[in-house]
Image 1: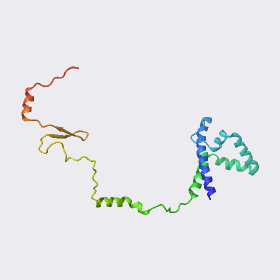
Image 2: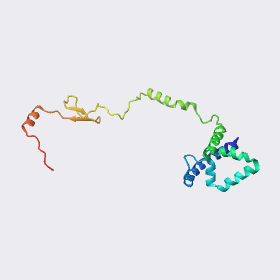
Image 3: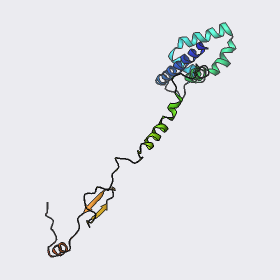
Image 4: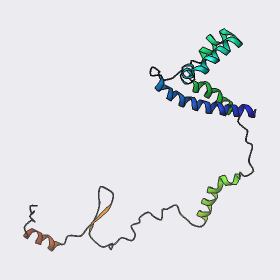
Length: 179
C-alpha cells in the first residue's frame, strides 16, 4: 500500500512535469490547440522513445493493442493521464491519522473561558480607543456651533457676538488681490 501511495506521488510529479513540457512543446508545435495530446507531446519531446515503444508493443504484445487502444488513450493530455490516477492513488491510499495525543479538547473552549473571566472581572466590550465626547475642549454652556463635515469630522465654529455682526456690516468686503 505504501508503495502505491509513493507511486501516486511520482505520477503527480510526472503530471506537473508533463504540464510544463506541454507548455514548452507549444513552441515546437505551432499548430497545437489548447490541449496537446500525449502522443504528440511524446513525439515532440522524444521521437526515438515513442517509435521504440510503438515497436515494442506491436512486436512483443499485440499489434492491435497499439492502434485502437493505446492510440485512443494517448489522445488525452499527458498531465491528465498521469495526474488523474496519481491523485486517486494519493487520496485513496493516504496514511490514516488517528487521534493525536497533543490535542486538548479543552482548548476548543479557551476563548469562552477567557471571555467569561473578563466579564467576571468587569471588563466590558467597549473599545477603549474609541473617541468619547466627555472631555470636549469647550464648556457645556458655550454657545458655539459644532458641525460635522463630509468626512464625519467635527468642526468648531466660534460664536458670533452681536456687536461683531454690526462691525462686519460697516466694513467693506475683502478684495482679492490679483496674483
